[in-house]
Image 1 (tube, rainbow, N blue to C red):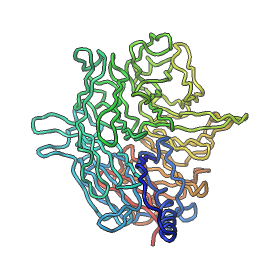
Image 2: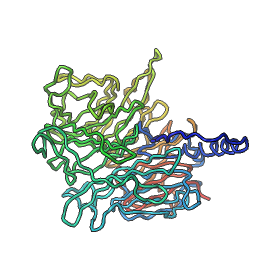
Image 3: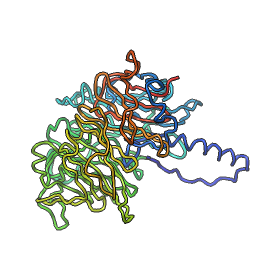
Image 4: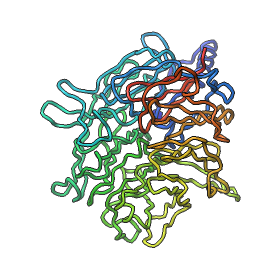
Length: 534
């Protein structure tokens, strides 16, 4: 989970009673904070797993004992995953916070247990509106906050919410701004917000002189924010593939909001957006960043090290190093990348998941899993991704055609299994054995999910009572819960009589958030809150 460490300050020794009291408070606080969901899909590996859910079980999640508790209305589409921050003191009262951002450019903090609105702020400056659709129907009728924020929880001081919002001023100019908000009241921190601007050496789309230029009106931030090593990383998507655009990743100091590093992955070409159906880029403990790039130019002429000669990585599986600034450290590219680019069946519609698996000799393999529109499931060795070979795929493992309908979503991981929700398909569970995935799914749900498929989340109590949760993009929306081993359904929000558990219209790319006995699901104008019925 995102975490920034405060400096240690020397102090006088405390008395024994005080030390005992502090120890008791720490013991009480630790389990509560373990429920925090501070980033997209729970952690920087993007597993979607809450391993400390002690309240919800395979026995009590049934329509007789579990259901909708209330619905929280908001002022726009909830395209960002709601986040959860436990035990935050506001005006002398301790609250569990539910942080919700909307396409109307509003950020809310609700009491996660009651739905009470504790504070809300607009990301718009005076005289501004949210952005129009930019002639694209992907985010409509307005564009404000699309990507999932990320929250830093320091050892001392208040949690900080980082969020990117798009707006349009009175002269018709578009803005992308990075905000840092105090979680106790929504006030701006670190002299924010800051306008996002960038340039990078290259002659690709929207270049001027020796640089390609970032035009805020041509992009939206769809990918969830990433916080690692004290740096915030932003990645940028296009509006309906409307050129000119290229593939941008940017880093900002989390304490100052100063831009510290920029990378363009198609600097001498075009396209190469980063969006992943809302999934955040993944990162490991060494600060390496992993992502799936969308269709765009790829240089088949390679240098002596096997990298594209002009630095263009469209439709590639990428590992970025952050040591000394952003740079491509390794990649994998399909041998048929030109065909996939031409047919818009690229990798960029899916999210990246980091896992490790042991083989029969006990060797632990550091792996990344990804999939996009071509129905194939790709597993790469994070230390040697395979690069590009024009005649065949040089890759750790590829399961061809196992994700029918393609992926516009993010997988989840638990107990050696990977859970995918393809378009028009059941959720499929793939099992690792001897550090490789078995050739076909070992279990699947009885129901299927229409476009865009579904992004599962998982709750468990230290491996027990493991439940897979998934939202269905329908009207009304449907929340499903399954036994994580068998994928047999144990609950859905259509089961109770008289529409008791209906909670609004479905919204694409929605990811359920599970924390402290409750499940939170965004809709087109609200958040549905589920838990044990009284």
